[in-house]
Image (cartoon, rainbow, N blue to C red):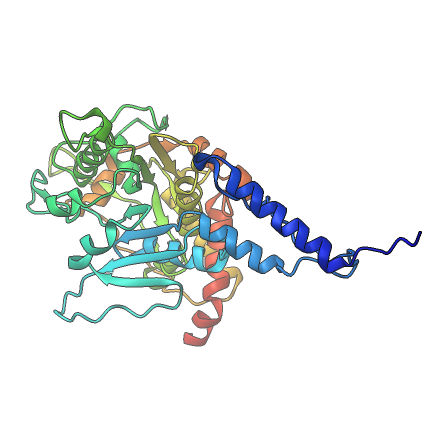
Length: 401
């Protein structure tokens, strides 16, 4: 007897009708085909018949299933711009889109120019975008309305319509100041240290706004419905003195010379001015601020948020930092004013008053832990930070003479 081989087309046809029959005979509740149920091959199998889906297409398909991450930054100052630059340079998918609000004091509605992935939107239109954002960062400082400091404006938390537009599951960051700790007599302060800022100061206004955001974390949109409780993660970032490539101790020394030690008036006006006892101050480079904020806000395991001090690891007297800046400029043959300027303050700015009275050293242990997987701080002390600032400015300064 002669046995003939079965044609390949007939075998494929039999397989097809068998699959259709199994599908039609299944109960209605189970009549679905998973992505792994049907496999189409040639017969006989060909070794050269590999998947036609490229790795880029597979990655794109997986990306579509992930949540699109949109960051809205209120404000377009130093911190906001540094974050925009950092995210754009990293280009690691942390945020798919970054919006940043602006307001023009000259009355123009033209947005600022952008050299990164940031899209500028007018502040008045922020409510149209915020509901679609997964992350929100507030960098706008409070505005003090009178000399007492008790009346202040915060354009974001004062806007009730805008606050109601914030999604329930959004991650929120608020950029505050370590000034809220007040005076601790040069002792170290951490995130759990007492808040000792004076009533009526700008630091007091920052602390009041911090509390508004913290209250938003647990607020119920409908008082009688526990299911509507907010799941927002609220992070408070308390920054030490900021510096960067456009403003630093180097800029101060180059433009105005070495500041004199500050003086204080004695109780009796006939007595000479006495030298102010110098305390410690803390500072942090803008790049490390941006890195810490992004590293914190992109975490999905930090439920509820938290408070983070953003500072470098070397608190130091201001005169020590200024003298190091002078030394760097001298070694680099950059001309300076050379004078000891009149940084003598009897009734000066609030910042100078706070520098005289609010003495503390800021602990950054929590910040270092957050940046551990990111390589740590780029500028752990003011020395590395000022060296970076000098490297970015030296050619321009030498050209200017």
